[in-house]
Image 1 (cartoon, rainbow, N blue to C red):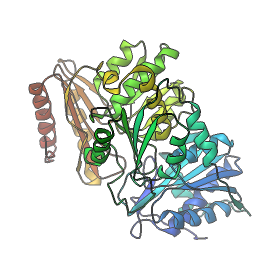
Image 2 (cartoon, rainbow, N blue to C red):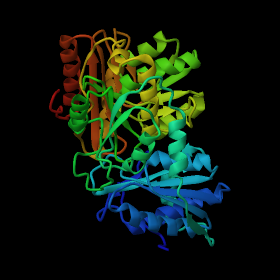
Image 3 (cartoon, rainbow, N blue to C red):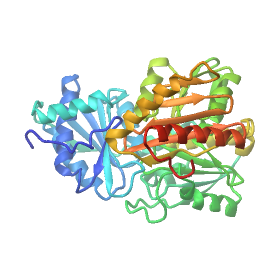
Length: 463
């Protein structure tokens, strides 16, 4: 084992651990993460931990090293092998284990990889991730004679996904695995569902030869849209690299964004959970929050980040939460973690019962908005710039302006709203705006340009 190991300063992030293979992350880091996280588990009274990995080329080597680190702390390690991140989450809950580790680079480029972790039923993030670093740096580590064994949980996972399908008529569905980890289970899942299923890029390939597996980027959905048109499908469903984020297109090939999907799910969930709290992140459309309220729910705006939303969901007892990015969490009938194949099954059932996806989306009023625009700002500057903008925005509050600074700054005006926030995972600022008219959108974008200029930052292209 490596004593007093030092991680690259960019690796320990807010929601997970992530780096570039061969540059900021390698097997020694994975072994040290196993030691540090294993120590947290042992000192919390745990004895058993599951570990899985995605389809990236570097994942098997990192998994092996992390297993060595976990065993060195005395833990029993259940190795579930290749699969999507939610299969790891499922394993921890299904087998009532004490913790879980997923080796995954999520939606990042092929040379990235990282770790997502569970302790008990909850996510590991923020201060707990920093604690792993401190334990490793100080060589304050548990020691013991652990063990490991292989266990194939994929059939149990697939059966659980299929169990909540509640459709009433057959559909034609296109599924795009994007050569990501969902491809490991997708064929067997769709074989258990009624209707016709067309699968794209189901072969797991860490080079991602067809398109990058990030369904929030329109170009990555072009193959899915084309296949929906070609097969006259009812819906198209896409996944990110590790299967915890969903993308969707309707029967016309129009993209249904994450916040629109959440609104569609929420209207259905609120039928069986009247008055429930539904949580969404600060990047989500105002139309989502308004529609939740219209359907009798209590909308709650919260910070962006899958770990933060999961924690808030558990705290409030919410049956449903989601992000603009496509992380959607069902506690209604399910476990409350982000599972894109499960979301796909629920969407298929909903469309089968209620009619077309385009019709379900049509209840949301039309708005004019920008996509989520991410632009590079130095790591040291990004948070400070947002602090400056928050202070200036608050000076305008009460003059027809509402300011929410729970995560960056979201400013609501008579035109709509605009948002600037610092990413917790990259050296970027994130901007978004939404208005009721094109002219209003231009005014909101002008406000963003002005605020960035006052902080000495050039506005991104499109603003």
